[in-house]
Amino acid sequence: MSRALHDVANGTLFGVALNYQGLLNQRIAEFGQAPYQKPPVKPVLFIKTPNTRNGHDRAVIHPQGERLQPGPALGVVIGKSASRVSIENALEHVAGYTIVNEFSLPEDSYYRPAVKAKCRDGFCSLGPELVGRDQLADPHQLSLKLFVNGELRQENSTANFVRSIPQLIAEISEFMTLHEGDVLITGTPEGRVDVQPGDTVEVEISGLGRLVNHIVAE
Image (cartoon, rainbow, N blue to C red):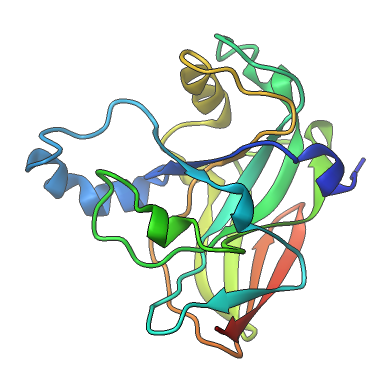
């Protein structure tokens, strides 16, 4: 059963970078160079701060003089605290799923995700609702599409995750407790596009509906 999102997804917003196989493959060569030295062996995490929270059918401000890129993603809402959970039990800690549009300025490096690129006001849109865990047969077989002004600009599938949702929860909860209401943003795929003031941006995930935002000038 779907539930009002703001009632349950009111905790910390955790982003996971490089969690689509295509994106990781695009960047794999640079991980042999400084400062990385080797590809990541654990999830690459960043936090979307509370000021980034935004919602369905609301405006996203395009910072003047910058490039703005939407980031379609599946959001996993934690339903009960998770600390050192096993992969086998990880989904028991999930309340449900929602759509996320993780807006960002373009980034050249994954070494230290830039706060100024990720954490502008309104740069994390969630919605339109929470769909309960039991309502999705398999969260790893969902189509994910990005539309700009009705035109399909990006398409992928959660089947292409580097790390599954249970694996993410297990690896993150090894070193920190995930609390009820926290949201895992499971990653955005390769092929990010630029958007401009006046654009309507929609993220569609099968079984979860569409999340709509409107880009406005600063």
